[in-house]
Image 1: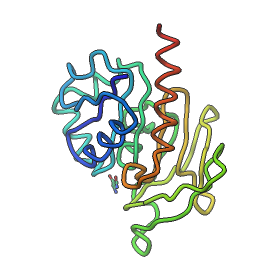
Image 2: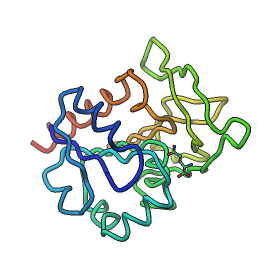
Image 3: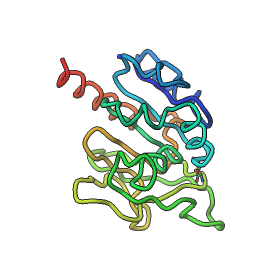
Image 4: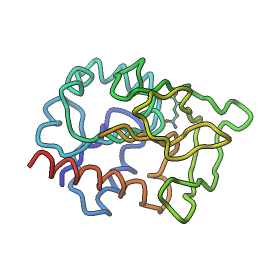
Length: 184
Ligand code: GLN
């Protein structure tokens, strides 16, 4: 399977390395034409304002509106996908929501459908402030949703590409496989 990683800014190399480890062919996406033939796309963490500005500059925002394969957004990537930005998932994200005191932290996260906790790294992370009825919440920190799925879109507040635990990426690749069988 061919997975694109949006490579305009942020932690795209780490995502690419993890996806390759899981057997995917990875394409770095910098221009709309790089989306052709992809089975899925990862939008990494970084700085959402910069990512959005660069996406608009290269026409990637428009191009993504016509992209119908699964998308996984982490941290800034989750912000980019929300209602007020690209509008590809029905939720409102609050940026830097954990505040200054605990700007960055790591925690053992209970994830829906997993028996073992997931060691999650949060870096000036957003949380989900509001989610539409079609959104499944898959993990929370102190009652704030930090992992969610709506249809083909998966979003995480944290950085699963920065640990050795591949389970969240495996979930995304399972979504990609489902999508490929639907389109086949
Ligand atoms: N605070 C960043 C933003 O608002 C996101 C941080 C991250 O992606 N690690 O864009």
